[in-house]
Length: 303
Image (cartoon, rainbow, N blue to C red):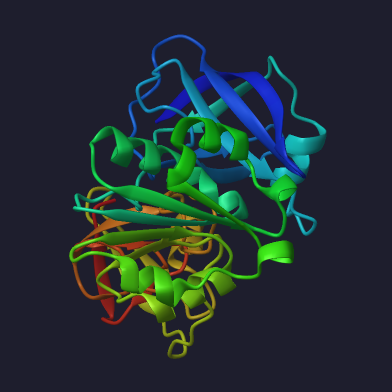
């Protein structure tokens, strides 16, 4: 399901980062919780995923932030160079694979544009009365979006680490200072996530990635996808993804990143054993068709 929005404001948020506020075109926008993201369908036919970083209580607006990537595949470049206020854009319903779970204490670790999903998380944690702090890391203060907003709202809860001047934060010291049951939420570049995985226990750390981890899987093998609702059977060869095989067979599945990080191509598995290759952590009975395959010779899908 798509929602129609209008670009209400485009504002600089930091060096090479713009804040984009989308206004509901007609009905109130779908509700969301901290950690959620939306698919943004751009006029250049690209679909890109962005974390919501505004106020979940505001049903008239969504806010996202976009860094201009020097190696852009066309999404961030379009938004920075060509998108204008007043433009109509379709967006998906919010999806949340990075939810804020209950805890007696929170530590949020943000690296650059990774602040976006953590902004509403910090606000929600503080509003609940739970001890919460943010360590915000970037090369310099000028590269860190929403810095003034964070300082004005949260003051000493926010520790800013400009690595060109301050060096890298001591994550081991942060880990040792946490109380029992505390949760750590981290979003940022791959080296930061790798350092966090070394410093914090796996059961304590919740992380969201910009790009999938580099991992090795067994060689692809062909399998059969049985689509229960349509009554169709689709053969998936070794050299083709499940997503592409279904689309080529006339059974279109929504998709976005095609890297196993956004979740837009989620399918329900009724029978068979999927091989999960995503970076989200597919729930029981689900799989992401863009990267995941089958360990069994046959998968039955609710499609």
